[in-house]
Image (cartoon, rainbow over all chains, first blue to last red; front, side, top):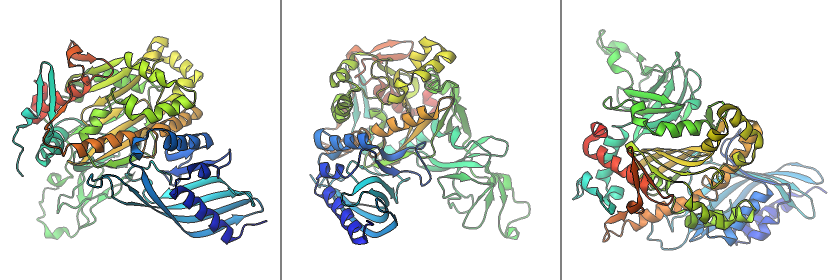
Length: 162
Length: 425
């Protein structure tokens, strides 16, 4: 059964909420064994070019392990995030594969001693997301590609999940 | 602008058993301005990699210190480093980061320059005398431009040593780094990791050759490598007792760990590919191969690092803002699979979302923030001073000692005091 626009939107909103509430295990569970979480630097770059993030499932597990279990100083103090999803479009859909595009506006701030100039300063990241969703009743993210507006420009600390 | 109470020379204390750097070296705008003139404009600095401009007409834009430049390759193949400033009213003539061009046209009044900077034409020429000397109106060319093993260096002054003299003993380490390619050629990727931090450029300079912080700042990465079954967390402690730090002349220095220890931790792919090792053996022999595959973080003062997997360039923007560019390297003469594996290994630790870089950058910002505690004026870089060895002008220390940082600051002081001529003293 093809997904309705409302079902897709509701799935993406839930994904955003899991990240903003720090429910990282539940977020990780959205990705199947064969997956790609990808933030390219170049529009036309593939695996032969560096990416900001090019995570298969095992690298993605490491990313979550780092945030949950280790002293990642770039997240001490941690980031608060707010992922806003808009402009959701179903690009292509069949009974078990749905390709989706949407826009992401991400507000992020690290709390702590706000007199230290890098803390307490909200940053905004914008990006265009491309999802390949698989399944129907039990949706999974086979691929999430985020083209940040600033992908090939100097970036700040991106140690939170985008 | 008020200069700090101490002279540039007094900002470094270098006595037996005592090595300190004054906070003003990191936070005074006047010191920063002098650094730009004496160090980044007055001595050799890294500009670009030849593989970024392989064909005639190729160019990249960058900065020598804070001065905007275009690094171009002209029709004859010669590389030029041109000030990106129109000779008429100072407008930038090129707004792109890289590309291919036949000429550079100033957007303001259409003054048009060749790839070698020559002024070719300008609009409405009747407004100038017919005998105007166009040759005096070329884009300003860096008077000193030279290349060593693909690395393009430039100097805005024509005074001082040749590049070969300047690199001196560091050439041995550059050679070993390039020989990671079995055919001795390295390319950089089109994409690069770029990050900006709110802190002085010298925090990155110091940290790239710092062997003391790894167990603490990178405890997160150590646990990730342990979890993956690649390397026991305890081995990261044991490896501290191998290799060492080296301080060279001209502010250069490195941390070096022999093959089989830490080596390969940040280029895991290279450590795993048997075919790659065989091809290095065929070209260089097994002994040289082990030397080539030793882990080295090489600082070429002031703005270039050569790491196992990438070139890192420090770009000071202001006294308290710095951009760092990490350009991953592709080895010529190895399989695509090997280069892809190296890239994925690089991304795991480095870049703004890597499992290592952001934790390092956090320390730079912590230092910048702490430096505001001016009641304590000095930063200590005396670790291992009592056990440092000197031979033939080369200093060596324990792998966790601040030997390379001290060499960098001694040269920093010489340049800040005397400019380019001081470096030969």
